[in-house]
Length: 361
Image (cartoon, rainbow, N blue to C red; front, side):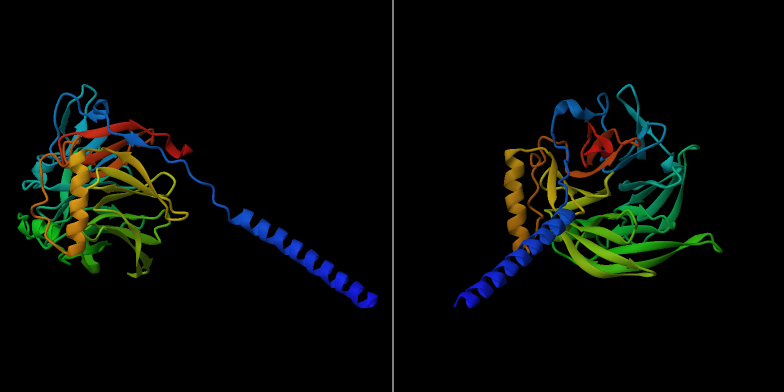
């Protein structure tokens, strides 16, 4: 009996040591896999952060910061405006001379050479290339339908979204695609043909419900597209000449423009919520970084969700106070070139400017 008891104790001891060692190994593994929580900034609406002070813009949906410190924003009347130190603005890039006549400047993208800006037009379907130094513009592509947002990768390919099948110079079909869930959105890529000095266009994805904002990860292995009418952000893997592995990356009400942040995370404007979110690329966690609250806006959010889930039209959702306290729908964001300031843009008459902590968050 004693012999059996000793054997039992020895086996129990060995089992305890084994478990203890396994716990230590698990502990080491857990420590290795622990992800440090990022500290994202948070901003609330304040009238003092509204710019420009002495004049109004017309639908400043997007913008860029230049190396010399200039801030360039979209303007429906002139294509682009530059913000001046005296609180006013003036047209930039002489886009009207290049054929910017129908309004509709939406996407604004600074090329990697820091010498050119791309501007997409949702009314005419034109893509303009603006020479920053000479302030001259040219049309480099004419799409069949309106072009919403735009991104140029490191290989020189230009990617853009089509929200609806609105013929050039018209907006009726675009309004219908926004109001009702119609799969007429698409993602395109322009590839430069050096021999012909032109671009070859290829549809990369179709049947999207109001394709809107677009960006890529730092390595440009994935392309992200905001599908506004289905309240989600899609992610596609880029493989040679195609995209594949379509997946739902995140759920956000009415996602508009997308931007890759200083740390590689995805920033997105929620049009119906008057909010800006960041999606942490480590775990796809979502963080609210800007909010402009109002009772009317809260009410309209609920109406948006209900009608969206029932597949109903949003034609009658509009109300002049639903964007309060903003001057119009919140659609995007961008940083100054040195990333010390962040700007929130929209379809109103002003943009918002806040200090930013750069890569320290």
